[in-house]
Length: 152
Image 1 (cartoon, helix red, strand yellow):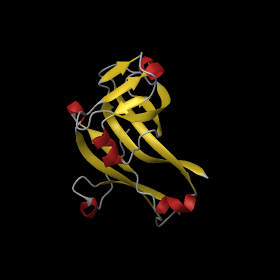
Image 2 (cartoon, helix red, strand yellow):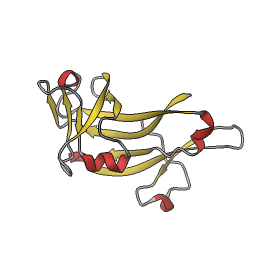
Image 3 (tube, rainbow, N blue to C red):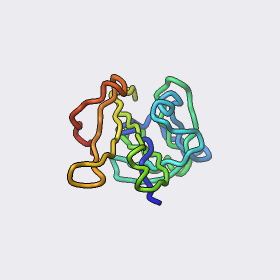
């Protein structure tokens, strides 16, 4: 088994940090639904401003609010305004990589979804596992034929 990314929120902005809350990250459930992230699911969080990396679980906040609030001990790793990456993962076998279709959301100011991307693993001409990122913002059928640049 290998651990792979299943869903990702790339470049979401922290809207709050509540040290006195009893743990977790509070996220807008509409954003989570679009990416495929579930309540109580453990996620990894990478702070692009500080380099901090943590793991915690998701709880849902106010729908449509764009909230991204670090709670409890996690609040020490992120400040309001920090830009973070949140990744949900799963364990699978390498042969199943061809059927996984992780969704990646990117964000504008105010934590509004800017683009919807999908990671795609396929058998390439020179290797068994090749990789590309597809822009599916306009829907799965409108996926770019050319790979879009990988975001860092």
